[in-house]
Length: 142
Figure 1 (cartoon, rainbow, N blue to C red):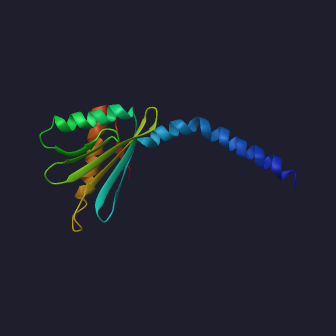
Figure 2: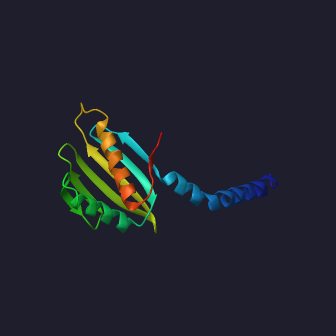
Figure 3: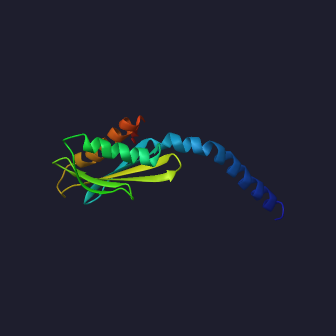
């Protein structure tokens, strides 16, 4: 039994060393994939991108202010949260800091129970527009 303890210890240390170094670069590679899901009341899309949180949030606010298609209906700068409408959908965006230059964007678009999957497309499209405005290419998860 004592032979297994050192082996297990070195195996664990090996995995930690092996996965800690390339882990961050793998995380960043995965980070640009937009994930979406549908609940009974809303469609949600989320993505993690390499960008400073305040820059992403300010880009969202500037884009909404400068586009007549959107009307900001609620905003909390301290929490980096904004609600807006585009006449057809009510959309909420939350921008969270995960690390110094790693940001998560979450978009929720409310829908009626009988709505088609189009609302999910609205949430995903909103994230893609933010990514483009910040200069980062994001893709949807297949």
